[in-house]
View 1 (spheres, rainbow, N blue to C red):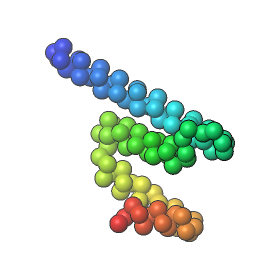
View 2: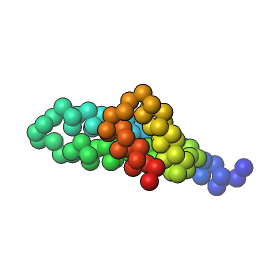
View 3: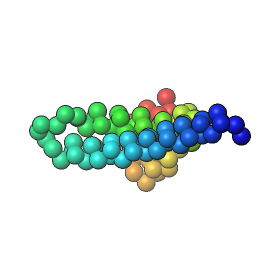
Length: 98
């Protein structure tokens, strides 16, 4: 293993750690936005978009393809629909399997 390989590995580890920190921060921001009705810099949608983006980027860093993540989320929703036939669950499932 050369020095360039070690540097690449360290960069990947640093990227993963940064994404994990951002994911935790996004989660905290979501709960903060949910409890603060006024004077909030970010809306719930802003925070959830950032959270979702970081989930996809973190998955990619672990070798999970975006399409694989979509497919697994759709499969999970299909199983969930069997127990919960709410309109929101059905809408999300329809969105993911389009």
